[in-house]
Length: 195
Image (cartoon, rainbow, N blue to C red):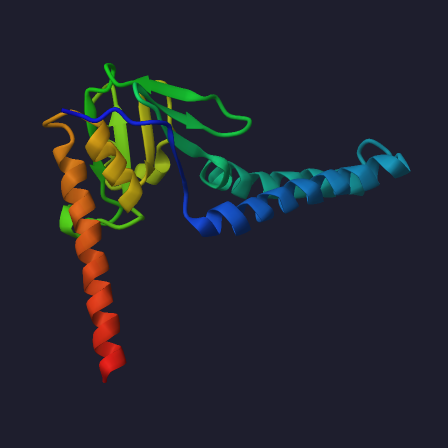
């Protein structure tokens, strides 16, 4: 039987939380400052400065579109639902009773839970995982029927306890794999320090 648990919040990698957020805010600030400088001087509507600012805005939108949800998104596991939130994006919710499919999409073609990494994605869905996106989960965005998030040891442990049998088995194996990788890294470190 699945344990009842309190609200748990999961974020992306710490680099995306700190440097990624700072970079995204610098992009937005730079574009706003460029438009401020342009509008302050009141140039002609089709002047070179307007075209330059339009080009800069378009170039800045590319990384914003690709990384905004990864830098600011968070997964919240409540007692009876999973919520994905990100500023300026629609909040996605899946109730525990609605989730029919849960698993891991491997970024690289190892397809083995023994080699799970933080690059792999954990997904929960009302419908089966789309075949054309197997190994390409980075192309999918969370929607009303599908939520994905990067795999981590803490998330696997949480979902192992949250899901009932037999759906929690994949997360139990993934958690054990993360523990096994930690033990292997520890042995390498201690073996290297003894030499």
